[in-house]
Length: 331
Image (cartoon, rainbow, N blue to C red):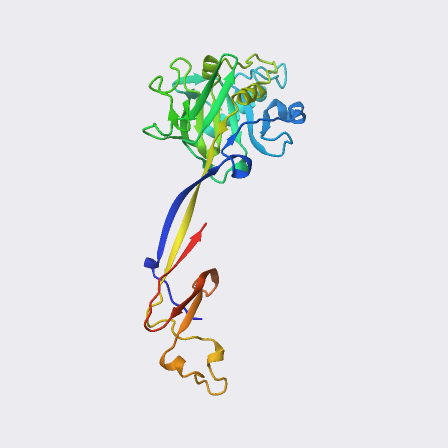
């Protein structure tokens, strides 16, 4: 075994973006079936959100749907004597803190301020880093129409950021292609269809725009259980298409190991040396040495082995040969 210190020029760092299907163990980009648990719906958590599964056995959890309302409408009050305090108000406050970072800020969808919205949060096990902008197609269908939604990442000139990371408008279209029936892809009176927040894997859907385009309604009456999450899930079920991919940045370290012609030509294997005299046992190894490189080990300055790279086949090395071995470390 021989050692050689690596120089700064021997290291190269590269980053690549990798996409994958989001749903069902990160293998499927589209789901067409949506199931909820009656047990969860009847429990305390059912007042706040509903989990959505892609199989009737309720084993493949895909995302959760919640309804948020700044006035507390659409859900029953915690205490009838305390106005406006309900699960929908709590959810609105949670997302306002998470996304806007300001308890006095408002959600503005395409220039229109909204007092309520639906939140669709992808299950954390479905992705490693973020959602892939431009891959979204969501069909929302209700009593008077159907609308295909996507994000405007492919046509936006600038990327908007808030406390949740990147923010894109939800517009009419599919797979990043905007339906340009108007300059923005959404209504001037009710605003965009919401926000696409890829860095926290969340969609915020604007009820005003969805009601105008598809007839999808929600209950906003205070101290009234409106079952609003289920109404949105039912519209997904009618549309039968929710397509979305995940995105992950993989950073690779490339280490270039360069055995020069004068290096690594002798073996340190004890079988080549006489134990009594210390002489080389084989004359050919003196006059015309040859070794076979099979493994590259990467050590730190304290001689600790950090990584091992195996060659696909032994690489012959002698005084007439030089080699360039590229080691790739992914993390």
